[in-house]
Image (tube, rainbow over all chains, first blue to last red; front, side, top):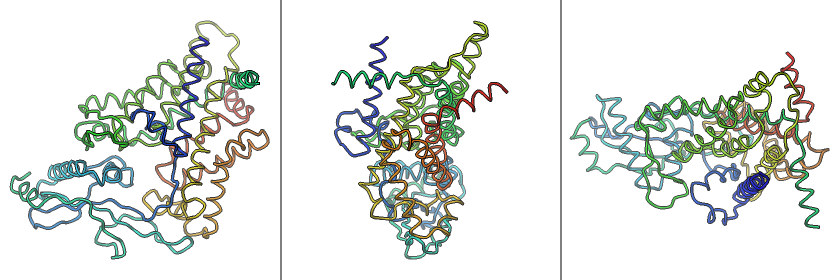
Length: 178
Length: 297
């Protein structure tokens, strides 16, 4: 029993050490721990740097009827915390915006789910983008955050496109139908 | 010298602690975790099931994809969600406490590994905290197990203290979290840029945050930033010394209250950390009054 208690104590101490070392960026922790265990020690490095912008993740759908991109409401497709940055769409874009296979999977998911929900208004693909909303200096007059359609943001808000469905794919999907 | 130091460490770790600390943590940890998970659990098929968006297996080692687990049939997704709630509630009420703590930890580990998109600090620390509860006597009093044991054995003396090891774990865990986080902030931009101000403008912004944005001058944000930094970096000192422990407890609770009030969904993390602070460092008399007054009522 004493040996078991000691072993549990050693494991607990190693866990605490790993959490602390990871927070202070000792990279040996990443090298030593297998990936599944790493997630559980990457917990203490919270908001270390300033956000350069407010980032809002959005999507436009390619309308099969008008052959133009128009913003689509993703909230019904991602019902978990749909109105904030904990939405699955925002998280997927945050983590994987540079990972082509994930963006293709998102394209496929959003197109199918949208066409299932709105069969009379099908889309053939998506344009995934982020809005980079500038943060004013401290103490200045600021508007309260509110979600607005993309078009309502002024030109000072940068639109950064991360992914667009290819024209051939859009055409093929629109021809196939929902 | 080394032997004496080890013996002193052993005495510090094993020093008995009031059982109320464990009972308090047994209630707070699963309930705050379930509170966080609630907005996900009610959408189990849109989280774990086949109708959700799942990140495809990238096929290479990726820090964001610790494991590559398949989507579940909707019925199984619901079963896992319900089992998580049952295990968490059973742990909170002290029913089959050890088994409930192990089941809760295992289920939350699965939830974290199965989907990076819904893994946040609360669920990443909950398994370790629940496993610590499983290793403790947290069900020995103020719960269903304790009530059943008393009914079986008759009214006798109830445990007032438990071996201190697990409480020490929670106490050190908090210090590790604060000082690790504080040093990361120190190395980041908390001395040179307006980090706190920069994080109150997005969709986390609550009414309280918006009010502060309007009324607090720039220097006020800097002051809050430095206070946070001093508290977190100095946490090992503030909590080690008896004289600074109580002020540190109040500063910590104030900080978590601000976080919970200002950043919408982060409220569950704030509640979990505040609960850990109270359970680990609140004066013994407070916890005794809380539990024994309730038991007497």
